Length: 471
Image 1 (tube, rainbow, N blue to C red):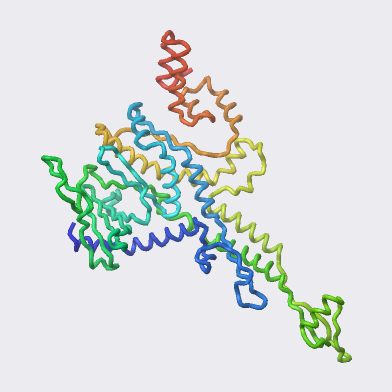
Image 2 (cartoon, rainbow, N blue to C red; image 1 turned 180 degrees about the vertical axis):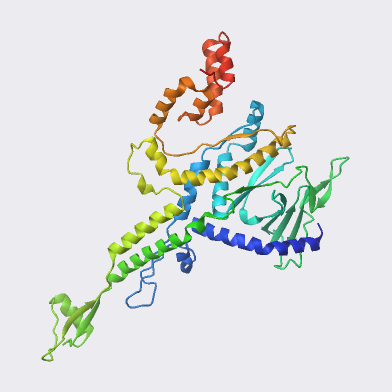
């Protein structure tokens, strides 16, 4: 791509990128408990009983409440603590996919859920390293600006990836701009906001001699063989909107009410005494008399005299504020489709009762899963294409997602026992509350049959290989 064309592309995508990143940064602030109420404290949540120059209202406490992180982490933990099981109808390929995704795939998936909740969409970039090994990583959402086609298929045509990098020679930062297509990537760099000094990043990629394999220099462009843009989107919802937009106002209301309450408690301790016709000479004399004699002398002026001591205090509408706090907190969990920890009031809840508690969270997680399935399928197909599987783009891919939730294991085990005679071993393994990996459970069952009966019972072994015999 030519410099001038890239300059125009950067300028034309800057407005959309700036709006997206603004929403993402706001979500991140709330995720790290830097709510708007802490702006005066540079994002720090803290108390300050003497923060304002006001005789009656000197307290300026700014304590933020981290409801956003709680709601986001609830979904991430519920949906992505256990990595989904992938099945492509080939045990060899299943193992290869599992090994390629790695032992930390659930942590990557957890990060994708958090990023998608904060930004509206999360991104994975994949590549082939120098050892011809498939690699992938989670890209911060604020670095990626996708370019889609305008048709109904909404095909990903290209990706602009922009981020800041430190130059160790000068000690200054500069901007790196990668432009990815389905054939290659070209890398540029700049320091100005209008991209007037945009140049190729010529030292980015090594260039090798095809005949000898020797490195002969470096360049700003390199081709790839993926046949598509090697970025995979994981949207949170149809409109790619961050979760915070649904309940930010409610969190702000809760912060405002709560801190107003705390301010009043601090301010009420500052009782102002009003003296009328005080008979002493100074306030020091008044304080000493009040301390030593527990009495104060006042001068009477006759009929209608108003001499005496009065006090000026602040009344706190406790009941009204408590009611409003409780109502607002309930609304936060309702709009955020989360679980209020206060709802877990029993240790012996039935399966139905537990499911009711999780109903809103399950609805949100199911929607996220539906969109994440599309992204995960694309990532798995990229692995299959790397392995040159003939039907990589058409092969059926099954995903089994497991929820991590409080459950009544005894009740679930009893249900499985009642239907075991009418269910396949695969169905039982998937529903077993003490099994994390149902595919491994089937393999272990097969090994147990071999150890117990050897090969004298081939029918039982065939049943397990076929996912269990039908009764």
